[in-house]
Image (cartoon, rainbow, N blue to C red; front, side):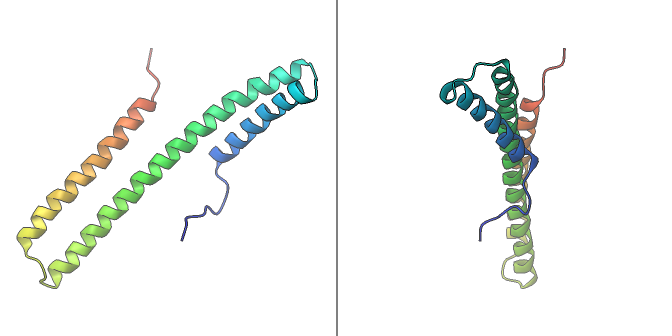
Length: 124
């Protein structure tokens, strides 16, 4: 079953408002032939809101993907513990698999860390 959000997130709302402002400015300047400084104001508000909203949507999506990967690692660990408790696999195999899971975790962590560092603004 698909993951359907229970409420509209602010990033979607910001993007929607930005697109609404930009679309309204385009409509009034192109189709309605209205020449006014308010059209420029709509563009001035709409374009940054759209960019900001899309950026936030990407960040939230990437964070959710990282959390899904971490949850999968946790599920693998729990399944491994069950297999060891039922004497299906040996403790040596468990230690090797734990090393593998640590590698997966570090990979997800480093990827997230690099993305967060890239998002930070340089300090002057």
